[in-house]
Length: 154
Image 1: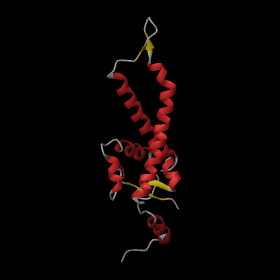
Image 2: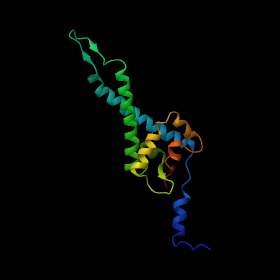
Image 3: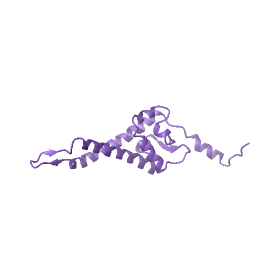
Image 4: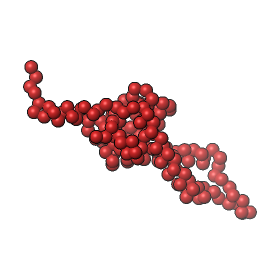
């Protein structure tokens, strides 16, 4: 017979809410978060974009070399995406703006808050091609690979 824990009720309450949220809530979280990242990206592009152009001696506008600038913009977008998710999920104890809007949060499987490493790994996993589709299944890859869950905030 196992000895009973003096905090059995507390342990039950801690694990009772560790049920992943529905794919619909996951979709709403992602929609809000991507809208925010796109909005910030567009704003930065409007502010920084003109500095990407140069002019020749006749005053004609010249873009940077064609293969370079789309790659730079894409790299900047990926950095913004990783930074957004990592900072928000760590600093707000597992909550991005999308999760705040839907009343959910990301936690570790053991019920503890995310560490910086957890938040960064979740962000990097989102870069896996077609990873977003996994959120419509039983468990998103950025959850299963990092041993985290998105649950309802109580």
